[in-house]
Image (tube, rainbow, N blue to C red; front, side, top):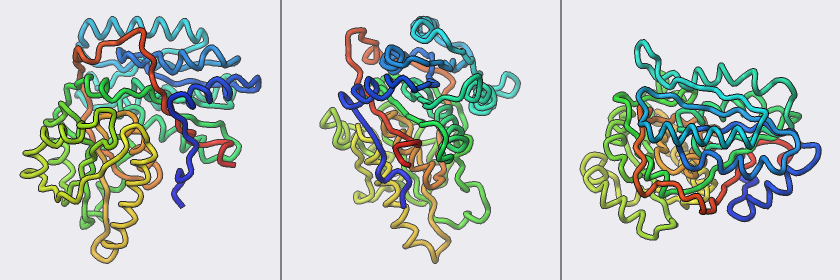
Length: 358
């Protein structure tokens, strides 16, 4: 049985209605974990939750990288001020993503170590809300795994909720400057480095995203895939987004990765559970085919849309898939990604564990 085959999810108006009704209950005590970064979505979920919760505290994460652009640094400062006003009872955790001595990516390790006391004290929450909107995947994958493994498997534990303020255009408009070496997200190597899987047929499933061509080339070289099944968003808000991505990655999919035209993964751009179910069906099918020939290993690379990354995260938690990525040393915010203070952000909510599944 797939763990989240019948997951409780909400989007758009239903998500706003769920927040207004569910979190307004007098017996709700909520711990909110969110990023206080430059991303315009940093405050969206907090703005929805803070007015309705009677007992709320928060942990705001600052991802610290060397020599950030002054404009992005100022945006992050202003977002933190807004978040602090919305949730007076809060802690701000500055997390250095890279080690100052050797440059190793250590952000996930530091985050988990520092956040532990803030989850358990001074009072146990009835609900833990993790806002993925402005967190990098190198941070929110290990964070969600830790929270789920620690609290989500206990029938009497707190409810765990994932939220994303969804905007695929913004995900594309925030362009990372990547580190040189690809790696597996901490906690998500999924047996890819074990000798017993050395003969397994490796299927790499990257998400094709505009402006990520060089990053995906390096990840491909790192995972040593036998086959590649790229993820294309369909249906999508922009009807030709999948066609445009195929044009941009034509050289890679035809020459470098030799993708069979039948091997593209089409996943609904705004529905994380669609990708989740596709990945699990693909894993089931390959296990039957390769079980007598060394086994099968799916390797994910959700480097773009946060909504699709949420679906990949659930699949990786369910089946322990490896997740390969490149950590970001810096970011550029394209003009198309400039914040619009008057816009309404659509939300996507997944109820990860808790009383809904009792």
